[in-house]
Image 1 (cartoon, helix red, strand yellow):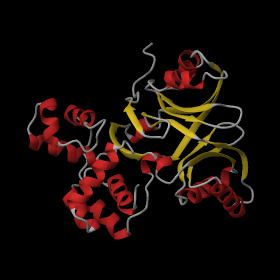
Image 2 (cartoon, helix red, strand yellow):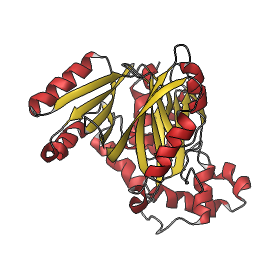
Image 3 (cartoon, one colour):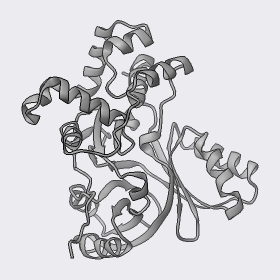
Length: 336
């Protein structure tokens, strides 16, 4: 069983993924050995995992193309399809869902042409897939790496932010990229453990870890098996929002801690929101609240998500526990 302290530890690492247990103990007023023991238990049960990856600089991020692809499977072939989709780097997430589609996946490539080719040549041809439907993401307003548990006080959050390095490097160096790679599957890996792999001094490795902690082009994630820890349901809402109201609706959704990702999309709906829920009744409450505040907003569709098979590159088991990490593709998927 997980309790309030477990969630506080996870929340703290979402803010500062490499805070020391001694530092965190002072903030939470808990013995550091207790924190260490709790973290070891959570990761040992594969209920919590961390990762570190190189993202795109802001000006390059806008050039990436992302899409959500609906997939219809032949009866009885879904598991086989999941097995083929999981190892693919450009496929960041895979969800089992309701309605006329069996799955939906998130893909990122370097261009519209690459996306079109990838879906046609790498996805649609998988045995067991009957059809696909693509929704391009026009703008991602916020996503899972920025989501927080919100179990800490404002003072505790500020204390953690104050401990984070604040001097980002102007641009990534080969040494920085080597550190990110070394931390890829474990964001809390020690500098001593990395030393033999990197062949550099502890002080140099520690300095570069601080540098990448402050860098905007590095993605740090602390994820957990949500279905086992209080969020047994998930859903996607597809909304039709008038352009002049879009920013206000997004700001309202940002205040709902159930919303993990929000993006403008192409299609009949122009805004999609992806949620974790304590129960399905929460979805009714959110819809009612949203359409009461914004009477012109129309809910075009709603998908229930009973299972997430891959999230942000991490392959998950039936219970949502971590199995392994597949490095996400950041390079062109077609060299020609």
